[in-house]
Image (cartoon, rainbow, N blue to C red; front, side, top):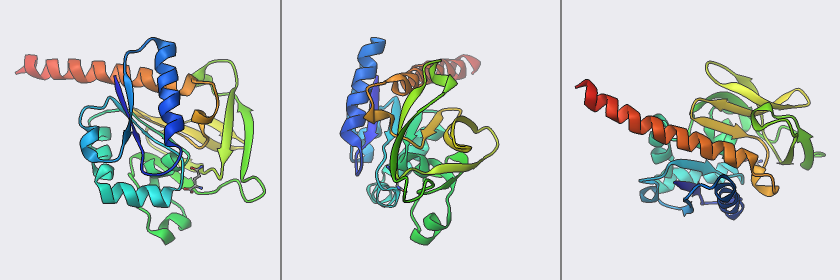
Length: 215
Ligand code: GLN
């Protein structure tokens, strides 16, 4: 299995490490690669868009052609995980700040986001949240100038909330959180993502077989 981490700006090496730890935990053979160019996304089974500054990440993804490539991968059902700025990148709808900066978004998830939703006093904080998708144990969530989701529609659904705000969402092959799962030792979110990648790989393969058989 090969997971590409979009490595143009932000918390890249932490995700590389977290994916490797999660692979070891699950006993999955695979690698995590630092992606700077679209060619590196040729044969990946999953993509992670890290936290950082979504304005910068968006512009650099557009300039390098990785934006277009990730959109195509998502459309062919390759799983994508976005964390913090990565969640903003996945959204179909941004806020005034997104509009003002004209930052490019992938526009894949049926969600509307608010950047820096937790205000200046709470620039950065940690909290244990119940995320049933990841099991019974609460998950330690590190928020750093985090966004929030103010609306979900269609097939997008909330998977985590904090103080009435949605901070985690999923939609078919896409999953995004407003916090930084790569900054804690708990690899459950990365493990969940790797399982999504394994299942999607299985579906892509059997989908391909059906097309051949149907003919
Ligand atoms: N505040 C950043 C943004 O709006 C996101 C912060 C983060 O990724 N830690 O892009």
